[in-house]
Image 1: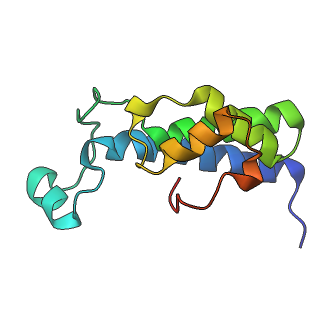
Image 2 (image 1 turned 60 degrees about the vertical axis):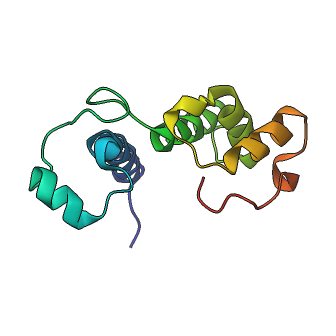
Image 3 (image 1 turned 90 degrees about the vertical axis):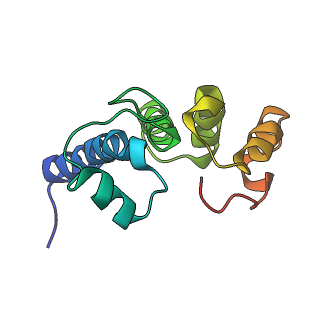
Length: 123
């Protein structure tokens, strides 16, 4: 069963928008256990302020933006282009995990994307 290009594009766009919205919705409670979210908000159905104003995004969306920019620029997924966009769009205040700083330092120093290490198992 083949999927049409339009349907695939629609799914791709929907996935990206879902990530953006989910990240903004969850920003205020990132890292919280589900019980704490339930006690504080019940069903979290509205944008809440957290470390950023309500509706802002975190490193997760910033990295998704980088991936999408690289795909648009290259017409395909190119890890080297993605790494370059990660570095260009890197704003530490977005809430990256601690190990990403070493990776970004190595990318900035010109270390190829596939040699910067595997010390960040999240981002």
